[in-house]
Length: 379
Ligand SMILES: Cc1cc2nc3c(=O)[nH]c(=O)nc-3n(C[C@H](O)[C@H](O)[C@H](O)COP(=O)(O)OP(=O)(O)OC[C@H]3O[C@@H](n4cnc5c(N)ncnc54)[C@H](O)[C@@H]3O)c2cc1C
Image (tube, protein in one colour):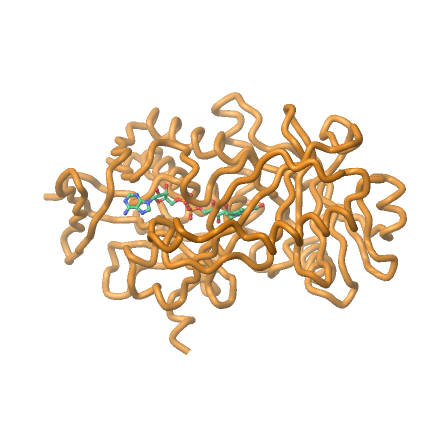
């Protein structure tokens, strides 16, 4: 008989939440991660992640986001800490582009409160934000940012409180499954379980090879600026921001707790094989990306200045359609995979953990997951 009811492979953004939901459901759960808790080697670090509901990517995400909001609030309440900063999010871009029409569509379908504002009104309200006068603009007040490492740690701590066991600094080398159980081979031995959830982020390609041709791993860069003006601070009402520009999508966060203004480019990225490959380690910094971010800041964030104080790198794991994979492994009904977050998955992590746990435990799934199946890649 298997030792564990469930093993979670990966205890990052999604895996930490999955471990919490499984152990809360009473499942004897083991979570394995190759790095220490809330580490900075994968996709869930760098202080902050934007969270929003009027989802320009597709309205089908909105119900999942509403559940994610509830679960983040529950996590805050149960751990007595502030994880979600409701700063609001200003989005600016062409009226016939991707962002503004997408936001308006999701807001309309789900009656979400957003306010449409012209770029000049936005600039009057927040002099540090600017957009082309021909563009549209919206503010979603119910949006903001999550403290990413604190969220992961809060999920891990709560999982532990509910009896989850952890193997950190332990690498999974392989897994197999038959009708009865799953065997997970690690560099410390073999673990057996009734179910396996794979939440391996940018390492998914090697652990789940059938997805490999459909996942692109992109190294992305984050930049912090020390602003020239006090108005960029969260306590002075500065919001998160997202621009669709002719040079691509860019976004950023207000200063909080003495940090700078974090700015990054959502588009682009350096294509890599894997975060660990020697070619990734040899790859130089992305000078073009840095230059584009500086030019973006000069053009659209007046008063930010050019004092860049630090940088970090992180990985997107992108599918061809940039929609997630949330599915059971073909031919392995006791293996669930959550992958391909395509650079927009963290805000969902709380709900994805619950979903992965429901899939693993074969309980009812209250969402339509058709857009997230593996079989969509077959065509
Ligand atoms: C720069 C950047 C900005 C982003 N901005 C946003 C945003 O504003 N809003 C948003 O919603 N999302 C955003 N995202 C996306 C979001 O952060 C990711 O989608 C999400 O964090 C991915 O979580 P994950 O659990 O899939 O991956 P990870 O958190 O990387 O977790 C995978 C875990 O698996 C472990 N693992 C892998 N292989 C093995 C193995 N063989 N053995 C043991 N352990 C293993 C890893 O060590 C890791 O801990 C951003 C991402 C980046 C990189």
